[in-house]
Length: 479
Ligand code: G6P
Image 1 (tube, rainbow, N blue to C red):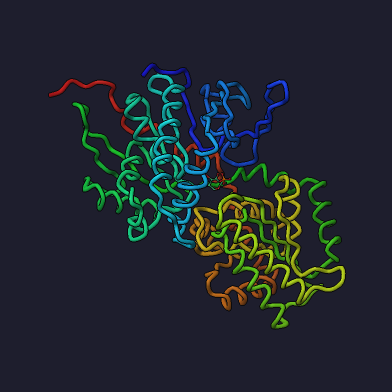
Image 2 (image 1 turned 90 degrees about the vertical axis):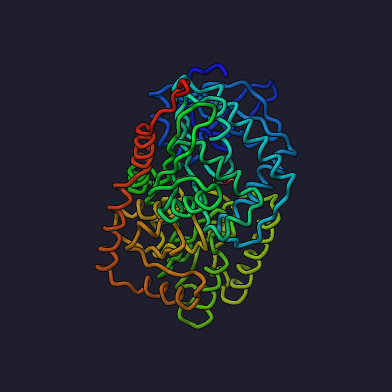
């Protein structure tokens, strides 16, 4: 396949922009929020980068174009493909399977077939974009077959893959009828990155069991085919982070600080403000959190209006049945808690089903006394890191589920098992009553970790390891 011109190519399910098409067909776009694009933008600019991804719209078809200092390379998906590849196999099969089967994954052959064909399309676009000997970085569970397809098309490029979500234990992973194909897909990469060492270990165990290949420490030896030499694939943890310095800076601005004060005032100046911020997803443990808060009100350990909670639940995957059900359940629970414990003009739970700009998020973080992250399973959880980055005043307390990737790093958070409602209630009360000195000490240590290990360092680490990986020679004469 003829090579393209981009030294560095990112392949992700979504493009890093939200595109609007005007009536005359002209395009405009806005950079979507998110640490990944912030971290990669400077690398893109330096290396003439391209980003291959889906626009988020059905049938959107467009030539690659320049925007945000890179070449944006749209991959077209039809309505049927969105249903089978994105809502189906990615979010109805892999997402629950990789998150401890919190809801039952569905296995449908038609979904798998579309996942295969869409992955091939992404790989073909990457192959067209990448310069000879260039670097391609593939992201996340939606695209696990891209590395092996791309390697066949372009054996000259270096391929990295990063999985943003957990990689499940073998006992769960092996439920997948196409488990071997997925592992082989990932083994097309030179470097496979995960959030936690445990995820990398789960993957290596799956490789050993399902392919019989030689695994030594973090390395897998893949025998060369068609007279190519053996290759080594490395699997390792690279915990992702946020653009911590920018977030820290934003949260110190007079506007954000004033808004934080105003938020508390609007809520009736409560003594205790609890906060939850999540995509509305069943992995986030929103119902467990509401249950714990509701019981604290019922027991009389907390009272409205002295205490209240804000729950921001941003809309997500709204056409997937499990997400619709979750929304109904959360909204019924919020309604019940407010019905039981709210007073005229003072709600117990302020529930917001929309997303907010970063400035408002920073103000919410600054306003909250206790941040509740109660995921039942979470690859990393960047909200926990954002809260910490926002608290340059060393105020606030972080209650953090031990089932998040962030728990490995944020050891000074008050950690909980969200399934243990009594334990969660006790920890929330401990966070509320925490002595200010202990709170500051914990927050200082959390901040050190987050500010030092930011998303830039994560990208540099990953790409540093990828650069060291052995290049695959284009053609090697047979012995
Ligand atoms: C998680 C996944 C991402 C995904 C994001 C939002 O963080 O790891 O790959 O983009 O959720 O979900 P969505 O389905 O809207 O892209």
